[in-house]
Image (cartoon, rainbow over all chains, first blue to last red; front, side):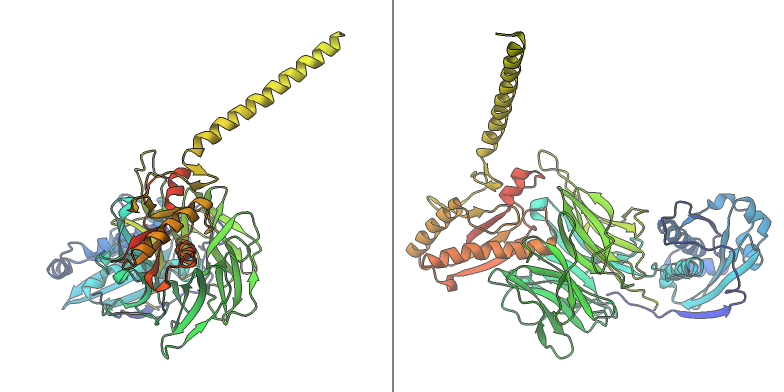
Length: 448
Length: 163
């Protein structure tokens, strides 16, 4: 199974980090002018290169870590990493003291430099972030971990740079759990899969023997909840992704589905379908107490908690059509919040608490959008033939969802892929996956 | 007849023929669909299998609906009669939805559809012990097309022998 190593972060130089820096990125608007940044390959000496080959079969570990950083910054849409062929200064020298004129010449506004040492099965990485225009250091950090953790080091550095330049927490040291799909549309084989946010390190958690759907991370631990058709009994399961142990959630005499964790990770909220009616229930994972949250002869499903755990949002067809509602977390004070044209589903509360992301079906098209928690300020971010199930990045700036293609006259050409889009509606991107994919769920920051 | 009257009559005639043509066109297009769909409920037999001779295994639904049509009720009465004659047979009702809905809502909708069929069988004397229900939502379409006819075939409840 997947093992995690705690990463030691040693802050060894923190001079000048909070004094009036000149570069800053405003992420609240669509960023059409990404910040030019130079990621100088992290310097690796010959001895460390040799050790690196011995330990993890990677020749230039410093260069590889830089590539991870460069890719992260690029896909954020906020940065424009410059081509390293244009760099004039050698990595080791730049790391000591950059010649700012050289970097200004190639129009870099920020520079990342660093150094990697591998010895005695330890990976030591230090990096610095420089403000080229102001001609000074903005941030310096060092990490020590095991060599196999080198990608995570790249993600943590990316998060620190993002945080320093935007003033918001990053989302690169995170993972996505999703459903991997293969085979014809009428006989899809589905497996639980997990990968790093950038599409690397894919691992499959089930074999594809039974249908699995809608995995969701516990925000506080390495647990996942999902729907499995094991033995043809569709039930919500709880899976520990470190040990691989799993169990059915609760003892319901029928289908349970649409599970999600409470923000403290201690409860699962889900739907239970009985005699043609679906209502929302919770189960406390510590004392196993089940509570009924909604009691209505309509379909109530896709529940999601507010980040403070005080409220929930869900979709219901009690008005005749699928619409979005909010209520207190005990089910009292139910309010309909979606009133636009069309059907609304899959509401998910933003980790910042101020917005609810949703799927909307209108005039045969599917939209991913956001609205305030009272239903005002609806904003549609993207339109397509079919897409649904948005999941928030832990900093609430990016949504990941899945999209399916329309088949041709013969019913061929079906595919399902993950996509991401900024809250601003810009930077729509295909998320790399090994197979077709659906039902993505974004983890919390791993290093927090 | 004044010239203006002739003009008026000609105009009326042209208008009338337009309306008639419009009606005619509309009629042909509905008849075309009528072969396999009524409203948006599938009425064809492309995907239908039989539990026994003359006993179709499935019923179809309108978009977002779980109401049984006249044709569906007829099918379910035949299933009930067959189940009464074969009292050793238990069945699973598999409820399905088309691909034009969110996954979780469609799971609930499939369950609601299968239960609509189950309730009808119970009304016609079949013990609820003999019937179990499972929803597949939109996970198991029979037709992989992305068009109204394919979707209509996928909105279904299928009665499957459990033993």
